[in-house]
Image 1 (spheres, one colour):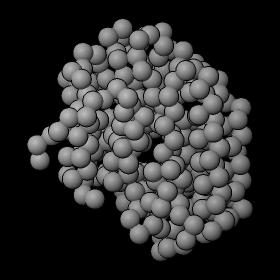
Image 2 (image 1 turned 90 degrees about the vertical axis):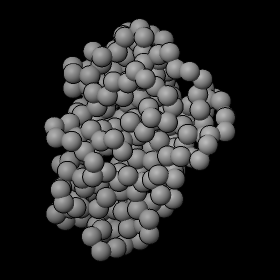
Image 3 (image 1 turned 120 degrees about the horizontal axis):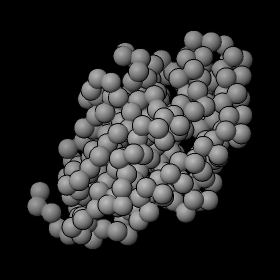
Image 4 (image 1 turned 180 degrees about the horizontal axis):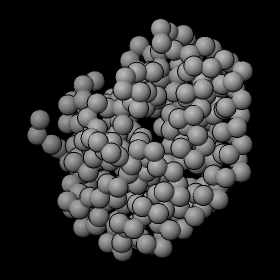
Amino acid sequence: MGIATALVLSMVLVPAPVASDYVALGDSYAAGVGTGGTGAGCGRSPYSYPDMYRDAHGYTSFQFPACAGATIPEVLDRQVSVLSTETGLVTITVGGNDVGFTDVMTTCSVGSDRSCAKAVDEAKGLMRTELPGRYAKLFAAVSDRAPGAKVVLLGYPRLFEEKACSGGLTAAKRTAVNEGADLLADVMSAAATAASATFVDVRTPFLGHGVCADEPWVNPLTTPTADSYHPNKSGQVGYLRALEAALEPLATTQPVAP
C-alpha cells in the first residue's frame, strides 16, 4: 500500500472536533528519523507517526518536542515542559537510548556474534534495573502537568526477520537483538499498566516487515547511518495504524470523499 493511499484510508476514522492539545514526546522513533524527510537537529519528520496522526485527526494544537537521541531523563528535562492542563493526548516513544540502542546496534553490525550477545545482555540488565524507575518518573511528570490527558506509550518493533539477506546480520545476532526487543516491550507494557497508561505493542504490525523482509518497514545499515535500524515511511504508517487502533474508541466513523 502506498503512503498516499494509507493516509487517505487513515482519514476514514474522523474524530469528533478536537478541543485539546496533542503533544508527542520521545526519541528518534517518535521524531521520524529514517523516513528521509527529517530536518537538522532533532530529526523531526512530516512522515513521523505523530505528524501524520495530527494531520489525519484534526488537531489544530500540536506540539512535537520529540528529539533524536533522547533518553527518559532528557524527555523529563527538555520535553515535558510543553504539557499543560489543556493537553488531551500525549504519545511517547522512548527508552531505547536509555539502554544503549546505538552502541548495541553498532557492536552487532561490526562485531562478532559473541560481542553482540554481550552488548544485548548488558542492555537487558539496564532494562530490568533502570527502566522501570525511569518510566515511573516519566508517567508521574506527565500526569502532574497534564492530568486530564490520554497517555499512550508506543513500543519498538523487532528489527529483523528470521531469514538472512544481503546487508543483514548473522542469525545469532538477529536472534539476540530481537530477544532484546521482546524484553523491552515487556518492561514498557508493565510500566504503562502500572501508570494506567496505554501501551501500544508494535511488534505485531511489524511482523513480516523487519530487515530482510520482502517489504521491509525498517531500514538496514544504511547511509546516513543515523537512519539505520529505524522505521522507514511505511514503518511510520505502521505506527500510525497501531496508534489509531489503540485510540479507535475515541473516534467516530464517517465517510470521507476520495
